[in-house]
Length: 202
Ligand code: AMP
Image (cartoon, rainbow, N blue to C red; front, side, top):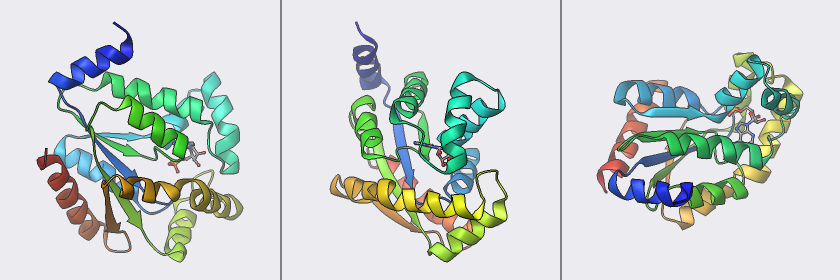
């Protein structure tokens, strides 16, 4: 039996649940995901963190990815899809996976749909905040790829390439919105409520 068939058979017995966190850079998805994961025992997978770990470990993949990341461009889909597919295959039964920073392109969304066992994607939470808030947060964060020019470019790439996924998931009936221009605590309450609801309605 191929890996894909094995994955499908396994998942029919032990469903995994995937929560997609959508929204622009600086909207606070990572902070919210980590808080929720710590509280609920969910798995938080940040593709940005995974790539930064590869860069720090000086791997071949890290070297390649760094070129794109420094410019604020997206790392090629093949690399990202392979990375996430590997993590999905490792999921234990009944695990809840918070996907933070993936998918970011239509091709990634489609690849995820093909690799996620049927019905595994429970909800796509769309975080939004005014652009001025995003820019201020990103500038305050001081990450290597957070210079003013790179930030501008990342926001443009988001608008062009990732924002269309909002309607993609809305069309599938999976989209829920979160107003991310509030206190961290208020947003977290909303996130836990919405995700909790989506997980309960099996
Ligand atoms: P983040 O920490 O999510 O802001 O990601 C930092 C950088 O990693 C992005 O600007 C991209 O260069 C790269 N990256 C992270 N996730 C993805 C993805 N799903 N597809 C392509 N590039 C990504």
